Length: 176
Image (tube, rainbow, N blue to C red; front, side, top):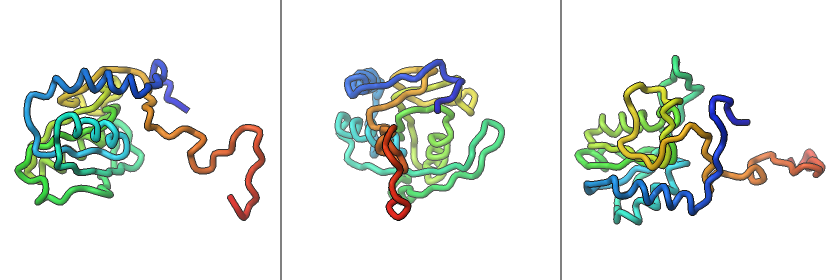
């Protein structure tokens, strides 16, 4: 289920997330005109940072990149994104939970910069060993890791579509 390239997985509690955010917050030494949360992982840390920093102008960005590899990436599809007029000329903080390969953050940052936004990036965890972009990373991060991070907002298996608990019969065809 998890990639062999990670030393192990780390399952975080909400208290762990609070500690990472407490380490992240003092790094910000500027005011922002708004915050962009990358869905889905950035929704929780972005919301917490908005509250803690008093940021009221909040946007979401949903990006999909088909089958990315380090050597070949498709053009990103933005399924949801703020219109240029809402971000142009504004200083924005873009937030996600983790920068693993960096693809989503780089795509969102690039599109915002193309709309004339001033962009800084923040994540709870930065995984430089799996980063696809040499000499590039988030402006701010709470911790560096080589682990597969499981956040408290990650969906447990029992809520995933099609999940059947061990020892339980499959639903009848007409219900499944």
